[in-house]
Image (cartoon, rainbow, N blue to C red; front, top):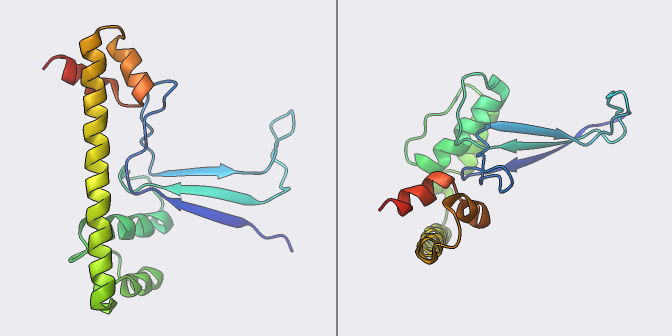
Length: 166
């Protein structure tokens, strides 16, 4: 009996801009199958591995319910941990929600969680500030176009042009 192996990657921040095209990927679910294809494009089930990327930041109405419940759980646990709106009719979701309930954490675990969350926010702000400083410096030099700056730093062109007009 051949089994399929699923690797699920949960992305809790918006996807980064594609450095080559400047496009932002706004998909809630991306699936990559690792089976090879022949020259006619027919997939051959050699490995039966699937890599599934879930990003709850880009909600769409056409996401199947079996994904929707999990995406909602991820999103709500991050953005509304005290009062999440989740499908409590789904036994798996209800069970996981109970496991991640902060009331089950010891005071030391809760404090460590708050400190880690604060550390991540500070690092994210420092990164954002550093990128903004780099954009300003490059704009001031006038050597690169806004498009070149956006591509070099991996940021949206709109961010660079917004700073350029200030």
